[in-house]
Amino acid sequence: MRTSFAVLALVAALASGTAGSATAPANAYCYIGWPLDGQVLAAGKPFRVWFGLRHMGVAPKGVAFPNTGHHHLLIDTELPAAGQPIPSDRNHLHYGAGETETMIELPPGKHTLQLLMGDENHVPHVPPVTSKKITITVR
Image (cartoon, rainbow, N blue to C red):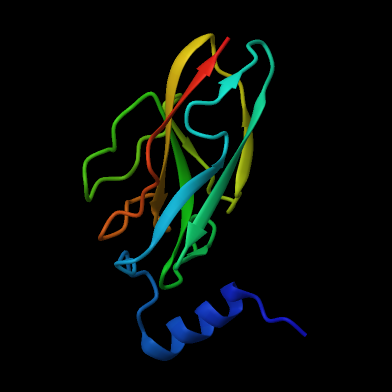
């Protein structure tokens, strides 16, 4: 029988009293598995964006487990200010249910995509857990 990471994290949090910590392991990172950097995609139809994460786990918003968070997809924007909640708008998409992929549609042109993990309150971890910023073209 497989025990979920979330259950193990909850047990560890309750035992250590560290639930709600916004710290992240120094070696944690996230990445965009698809599309690839430099990918050219067709205009007028949604495409899948697949999220990856290493050395941390995914937990939904409002759930405080150590070394977990949820994904935020940044589109055509820079990383937000440290210590502040990640905005929620067309350039900062939240995946607070713990999603690890999404479908998006973008207008024709060049676009940047980057992932940023947020804690249970949508605040970036310390240190921030980010992906490499990739550039895609929609034609």
